Image 1 (cartoon, rainbow, N blue to C red):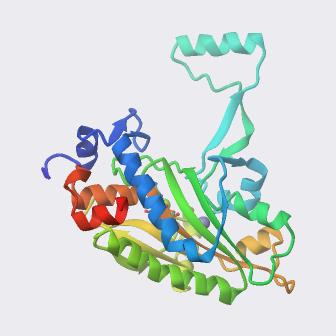
Image 2: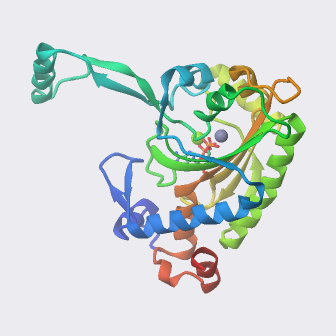
Image 3: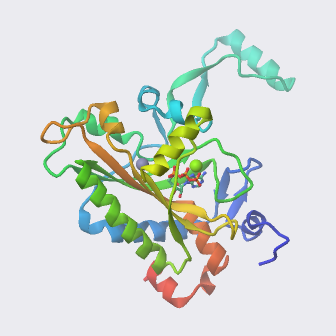
Length: 302
Ligand code: ATP
Ligand code: ZN
Ligand code: MG
């Protein structure tokens, strides 16, 4: 690949991603989506034996649930809220006037009951808690959602709107840690069969502000988050393509979720960055899927 042309431009040139004029907001071609679909099916095949319950939410969630989740405490910089016009005829006239003059037209936009989903698992915890205590052996869910994070970037692997597949385990501390351990191993096998170079490392979330720096280092010290990293946009700074998160009893406490024996539930999730893995494949195997190694094509397309 031409080192002078950025990876993002190569993806635009190949037609895999479509420029919308906003960094991190892209259209996807049929070829790109085909790779996403095949990767999605591969994840399913790696997790099939566990019999996870499939749940799909839209890419927006209940604002009240979002507020209670603690997301704004940790990541206010990433959140996206949905605002809607709630004015009358006069307000509409004002809006059109502002638009035509190129002025700020947001005055009559009011916050709606919907916020954009920041991670696939956020809408799940209140749903699970509403069902009552967990059954014996806890629960396991299979999720996929478009997610939004306000982190515009020229790095194609850092999108504002992207898909996250997740398995989420709820149960005792031992149950959820065993789940995470199993996926740390499966994740390595999964990326291995895609013939991608990777490393697994301890990580932290981008907690906001001064207090956030302490939360980040405590998260690392306790080994609560691991990432599987693949060089995508840069060889020196690899990209987190899978993440393995242990939330302790944070969501159990927040939502009053208990185990069958009445203790506060622990939770863990494994997240797959769908676009990131697709981009890693295009980076390492080329933009033409027909030219990918036969062994890899067999893994994905059978
Ligand atoms: P990073 O450290 O690169 O910001 P993250 O720690 O924020 O990643 P998670 O919050 O663990 O990522 O999200 C789960 C998965 O979603 C990640 O492993 C990654 O593959 C994917 N992901 C996260 N942010 C983005 C993004 N901006 N664009 C595309 N995929 C993303
Ligand atoms: Zn999650
Ligand atoms: Mg991030």
